Image (cartoon, rainbow, N blue to C red; front, side):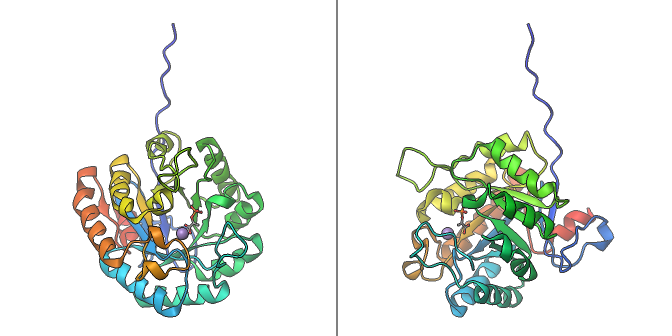
Length: 297
Ligand code: PEP
Ligand code: MN
C-alpha cells in the first residue's frame, strides 16, 4: 500500500516593492530606503480607495491610511467595471493624482492596469502593477506586465482554480519578472449573502505550492464593510502575508464599491488589532521600509 506524502512546501520568498529604479533588489546592501516587503516575517497592509475620484479624496485617504500604519497605497485609475456605463476611472489623470498622494503620504502605490497598451504609462507612475481578477487570464497583459520590470499584484479570477492562478503567475515569471504577489479575493458561489466567497483555505493551500507571497482582499471578497475587519484578522491567522483593503473618507458618496469601504477610523482600529495580533503569528506589521529591514536581516 502506498502512502501519499505531500512534497515539502517551497521556502517563502520576500518580494520588495518601491525602489525607484524598479530593479530587482538582490544584495542586502543595495536595498534602497522606502521599500515595502511582502514576505514571511511581515504582515503588509495596502489600503486606499477603490477608485481615484478627486484630488481631495485621494489625498485625504492616502494621508489617513499612512497615519494609521498602511505600508502601501492602492487606488484605481483604470477601473474594470461590469457595465460600460459605470464610472471607468480618471485614467492618466488618476495616475498623476496617485503619484501626488504617494509623495504626500510617503506610501508607494499599486494600481490596476487593464490594457497591455497602458503598461508603460502605468509602470512610469506606480511602484506595483495590479492585474485584476477579470484579467487574470489575459495572457497578453500578463506578458506585458512581466516585461515591465515592476512588481505585479496578481488577483485570482472569481472562477479560477489555484492551478489556473499559478499558471497565470507563471506567465509573468516566464518574462524574467520574479516579483509576483498573489491575491485571494473571493470566488463566485451560490450564496449572495456576501459579494463573493472568501476562500481562505486558498492561503495555506497556495503556501504548499509556491514561494510567492500571498495576500487577501477582504473588501472585494465580502462586499460589506462590517465583514472586512473579521476577515482581515482571519487572513492573518490563515498565514497570509498581508491584505489589500478599500478605505474611503465618505463611503456613501463613493463612485464605486462604497458599501465595502472602511471609514479611516475603522481602518485605524483594524491596523491596531492586526499589529497587536501579528506577533502571535511570528510576524510584525510591515512599515514602509520593512523590505529594507527584511533584506538586511
Ligand atoms: C480592485 O482591487 O480594484 C478590483 C477591481 O478588484 P478585483 O479585480 O479583485 O475585482
Ligand atoms: Mn473596488
